[in-house]
Image (tube, rainbow, N blue to C red; front, top):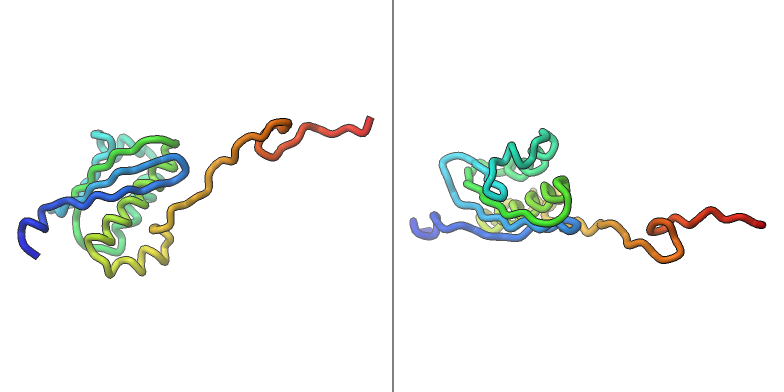
Length: 133
């Protein structure tokens, strides 16, 4: 690998429900994450969401500067979308990580989403109370 290819970024897309994360990783001295041009800790305030995103980096000792643009969905699905995008980017950078990430389920685009409401029903499947008379 030449010096020019090491400095280039890798861009991938991660998705979950209606959230979309456009992720760029660039090799760096230490791992830093910027989400929608704000600090990672501010954007994902809870420890649980931060762990969800950073759990991808457990298998690699490389350090990256991560920038992400998130849109759609809620904060939890955005964290999952970001993790999905990071996992895809790490595979492009280091293909031998694929089996480890696949076993953990980080490469799967979680397709579960809220079902639409049908007419005649109160919610997607909840029917109004039935009375015999």
